[in-house]
Amino acid sequence: MPFYETVFIARQELNTQQVEELTKQYSKIITDAKGKILKTENWGLRTLAYRINKNRKGHYVLIESDVESAAILEVERNMRLSEDILRYLTTRLEKPTEGASVMLGDNKNSEEKEAA
Image 1 (cartoon, rainbow, N blue to C red):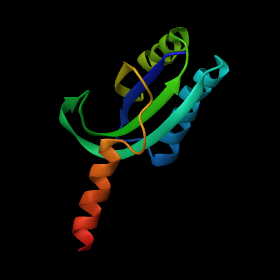
Image 2 (cartoon, rainbow, N blue to C red):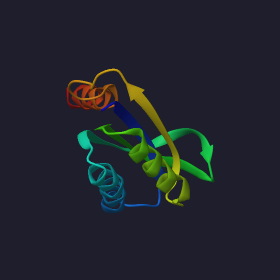
Image 3 (cartoon, rainbow, N blue to C red):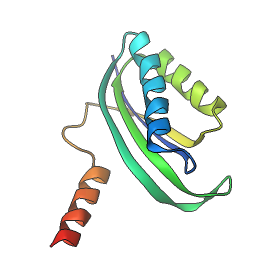
Image 4 (cartoon, rainbow, N blue to C red):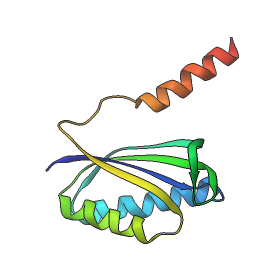
């Protein structure tokens, strides 16, 4: 099965628990389609480059999966219908990524610099 990476931005008004619930909901669609979740990362609340639907910030989440394209289409359909999702993007990967993403690595480096 092909590998996919989906990143979505949820509204800033949602709390962390609601964002995790959205992530579980989309992950369940993938697992119900006999797919496998390889990685899930919550990048936290970040400032957007520009306003989207009157929002200046958003919760960023990454889901990396190994699933057929029909399941990805269903996930994207649900994201398109949800009022809590500002933007989403799915890309096909040649092979699964290893380790934490660059976004998480960037956060850890900045936290280490602040602690020093």
